[in-house]
Length: 244
Image 1: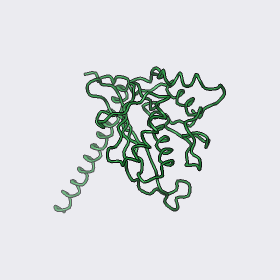
Image 2 (image 1 turned 90 degrees about the vertical axis):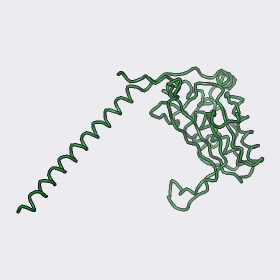
Image 3 (image 1 turned 135 degrees about the vertical axis):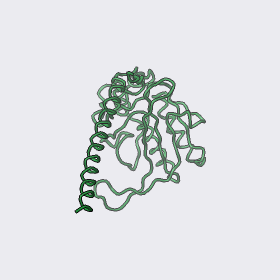
Image 4 (image 1 turned 90 degrees about the horizontal axis):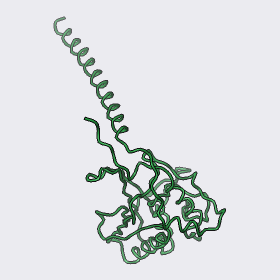
């Protein structure tokens, strides 16, 4: 009896302590989330880039858009507030790869303020030459399919200005045919500048799949991009410091 009672007591004590620890951690997590939420910038819109406004004004009326297909994140729409948006091109990509990437940037630069920089550390968008792993078909889950490009982002607080910002990384597989690579680069750069979604129409550059004759940047692409830049976001606004 004297050997089992301490063990039972120890088990009850450890169980109670573990339970209290879990409750404490959960409360701490909730408090941290509430604190972060109170520090987050409010949703506010930035001015639409003048070159984009001018491009849309030249379009024929009634072209429409696919704004309802654009995803809004917890930080709001993924728009830029400081222009020109700086783009760095991977120096490890071969000459043909770089030429196609630059051509896609030039296409978008007719409608949106972009600038190519040589320092990836200062870039808002980094375009990398990278072979992507095979990905199962999202509809069937069957045979893996080749991925030609993808874009992803990260959100951070700029230490000096305390502005909530984001940066984009675009990965483009090397070795693609020129026309295909140009089309993929055009599409992924569209994601990077704010079109975080896909068009249901194969006549738009942001169509969700590759087509035989890849389209150029369409009126619907531009109308959608302009609407995105009219929307509120937390990005580009100052993060409030916690009250001490």
